[in-house]
Length: 167
Image (tube, rainbow, N blue to C red; front, side, top):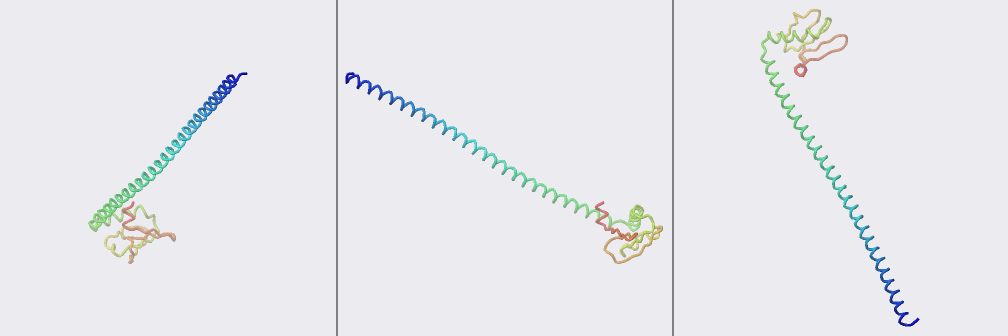
């Protein structure tokens, strides 16, 4: 072989090696870019998922706080309404004549007693309590805070205006 052929062969080999190295480098560069793009995509998806989860959690917390505030407002409104109803009911009861109050007590007691009871009545209601109209019960007046107490067989049931108004 001549020197020119050897040089040409070296040049060809060098060119082939250069192309092979360049092709391998290009291929590796594309792999690196592809891996980087995939990793960036995964990171972006993870970040989006975490952000969505955080937003959902914050939304749920905000909704829970709002629901709680609504419940508080509803309860406050109910309390105001009940307070007004109690107030008006007490006013109505307070405005009953002695006869109307006596009839009210009689209607209530007819549903509560069966005979043999002892009824302790607040002294405030001595004039309006229908003691003489009740049969088979013992009535006595005492200084109690309730309207009356029904006692029978060792148990007692206390009645106040609040109990009547709640029922």
